[in-house]
Image: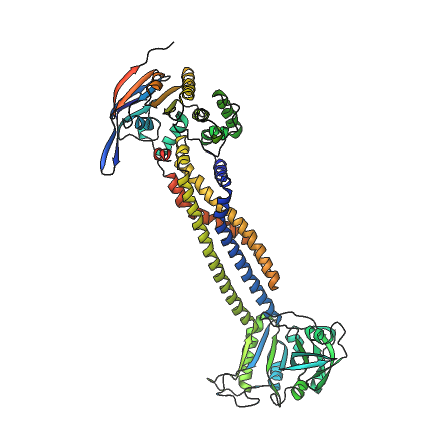
Amino acid sequence: MIEIRDLTKVYLMGEEEVSALAGVSLSIERGEYVAVIGPSGSGKSTLMNILGGLDRPTSGTYQFEGEDVGGFSDDELAEFRRRRIGFVFQSFQLLPRLTALQNVELPMIYAGLDRAERKARAAELLDRVGLGSRMGHRPTQLSGGQQQRVAIARSLANRPDLLLADEPTGALDTSTGEDVLKLFEELNRDGLTLAIVTHDPDVAEQSRRQVAFRDGLIVADKLNGVRA
Amino acid sequence: MRFHELIRFAVGAIVAHPLRSALTSLGVVIGVAAVVMMTAIGLGAQQRVTASISGLGSNLIVVMPNFQRGPVSQGAGFGLSLRDGDAEAIAKQVENVEAVAPDVNTRAQLAADGANWNTRIDGVTPDYLVARDLEIDKGRMFDEREARQGRKVAVVGATVARELWGDSDPIGRRVRVRTVPFEVIGVLKTKGQSGFGQDQDDVMLAPLAAVRSRLTGRRFRGDAVQTIYVKAADADSLDRVQEDVTNLLRERHKIRQGEDDDFATQNMASILQTMQQAVATFTVFLAAVAAVSLVVGGVGIMNIMLVSVTERTREIGLRMAIGAKRRDVLIQFALESVALSMVGGLIGLTIGVLGALAVAKLAGWPAAVPPWAAPLALGFSMVVGLVFGAYPSWRAARLDPIDALRRE
């Protein structure tokens, strides 16, 4: 599904050029569950931003189902994010003045779904993440774990091909973090392709494949043992 | 992305901060209210000027002595260049003239039945009513014969009648003007205030000959008159009549070519035009000053929109991450600014109209809120919202989603 070749990303920090990705090649197949690990500054977040269509590579190619995402315009990238990608962030990124249901509806508004369709699907997704009884609550009325589950429901709204999660358990305590990981596990079992950025080895252990970054390069790429 | 969803986003953001939104709109409220009020007051004044000048008599030419001509005052009667004969000549020789009315006037104290009142007294002929568009309310006007004989009869204005006799009928009563007794034979129909704040009903008419011989003393000795009112048959002939009167009087006064007239003619239509222009200029000036406050209101909107974009950087980043195009973000914020401004415009319009009506009522002016005030006010506030929302919206749309999401 994803083919990247010799990807580089160079940032200009003042006068100095900083290389966040120094020539990365990677393929991810449909249905995979990949954890991207590495210390901060290793380039893993930059890779996720490029995979998600939030950023463009300096050089190299990024193909998503045969499409050259690296060469997309701003509008094409927006459309790519809307149709193909679901984002889950460390800090949830829910809009505080909207209810859980309205937050989940938001991506579908940009997709042009009509109101009834949107509401029905948002309610269904909240049910699926176990928040069927919290639809009318605002983010401040929900616990961290519940907020992250609302965010996951939102990421699924437009039936993405790839779910990208950036430190999804980073702001959660261990047990709620495990709940979220269990949810990812279920989603992957249902066929969703997942890529999670984390620096927590325990989280990485839950995935099927671990890709380790250091200094903008992949230093290890291994499959986790098949679990019972 | 559907447009009405963007409108809902904008309205949602406005409703989320009611107090801030209200204060932001306030500048536009004040601006629009001021523009509407100033325009309405200006137009009211214009209508009033028109009404009062027309009230002096339509198609009217006023002929007066030209006091500027002589070097210094040279005693009684000086400068009164007009004579009865001039009026008669105009009536006989100038075409398209409906009425010619010579006038001498003075101010005097009236006394009747224990009451006193100081008023303006016009010595006139019966044609005066025609020339000045006056009508009799009660009783009658004096006739040609009474005018010629200088009978001591009087037709009083409504104010004079009220001040001297209250509600009782003044017809047949006696009124002493200084020491001379006059008999009241008629009351004029009320005309109200003129545009210059004069009470046009505060007047007494009496035969020219009687006023000249009994009241004005030596000033109007012989056959001198102060003013001649000439009413043209219609508006089209006004200029022609004015020219003919001027030529005739120059001839009669033996004024050689190149010499200044010893009289002046004023055409009420041209006075009206001048006054209207002056008031219109004034109105535009007032509205322009008011429009400055509209600009200040726009700057207020821009300020708050910039704050809002900064505050909602993460929201913008998120919207972009879930698929909003830059254009969607731009339109969302522009709509927010336009909505703030137009709500302000709507409230300002209401306040402006009510204010104009209140001012009109207090000042006794005709209320003149023009029908185009509503579309104009809303159009203006929309433009203000667009212009001053453009930069903040552009800032929002050009944010980098990664930086925006990372912002605290």
